[in-house]
Length: 51
Image (cartoon, rainbow, N blue to C red):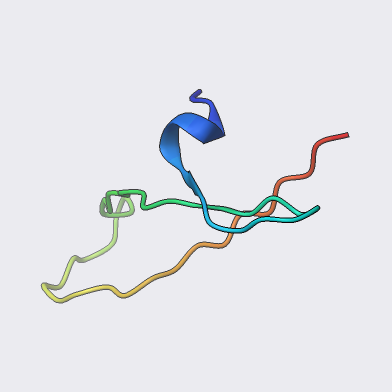
C-alpha cells in the first residue's frame, strides 16, 4: 500500500480536496483463453472517502 499523497498531486482548492495521478496496470491472459494482439484503452475512477 502507498499513501495517496505520495502518488498524486492536489489539483483543486477550497473545502473539497481533489487529487489526480497516473497509474500503470498490466494485462495478463485469462487461463484457457486465446490472446489476440491489439490494444486496450481503459480508464479508472477511484472514489475514496475518509471519515
